[in-house]
Image (cartoon, rainbow over all chains, first blue to last red):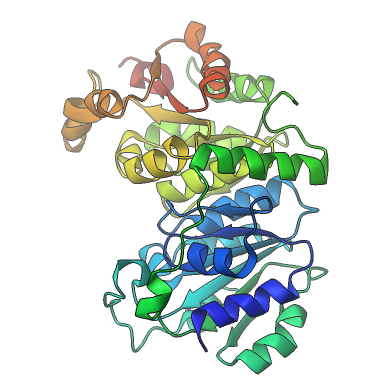
Length: 203
Length: 170
């Protein structure tokens, strides 16, 4: 399935989830699908750390439901993150691995061992049990919401097998928000949703 | 209780005073008493992580959920997180308290920390990361001040423990 189309499906299925994007193409694709300027933290500068960032947020605010995107290029840099995720086992966190089998943000450069990498098996090997893989849009549309339901005991790992960005996709706009503004827009949104105090003052 | 074995509790108390709830750690032998103390202290959620960069990610995300945090690691671990700190914390202006060891300084018995002795403080300076050496029990309250400094300036800061404090001066 095509990368942008897959994220467009998730955008339609989204209810009130907070989203953390990753280094790679997910920020571009999610911006194209949603134009979200409040409830998404575009963590573009984060190779392999988007789900750790999301885990910290999910721990801090357990009533928020969080989707964290990660490319498989980022995943390959730090697969041990799944050990930490499994240890924390946060039911409000869904790790969505966008497996395009390439370093998408760098002209689809080759990933190591790309043919053999079985991300679901890696996750199961680290003790994760709520592991799901989707490679077709119709099953993604039909079953994704059930896979990442939030009344479950532990955290969820979902692999989306997608095609790498096309040359046209690579030209999709990056989210046009300066990082400090993004921090405040997102943080104020989290404050409004939860009543928490991130910045120590209110305007 | 030995001269150094209450340091962990003193540090934990100081972290609690400034509102730290999450401690993410990677081990360093000098830090084991602090890590063990934090781990059994109900005031904290202690998360042992797989690599130091994961601690940076966790603590940065916790900040965006209004949870106070600290990343505890050795000097060598810090040397591996320059990317994460400069990309996440500097780019997005996210505060972060780092608790580190002053490896390679006088009193460190391990030859393999030579590189930290040569370059650790120079790396702090190179990335304009403020740091405070915590060399005695009287310095421990500085941890709270460091924490507040990170919040004031929306940047990371390191509190760096000496061996003399954590292991004694022998």
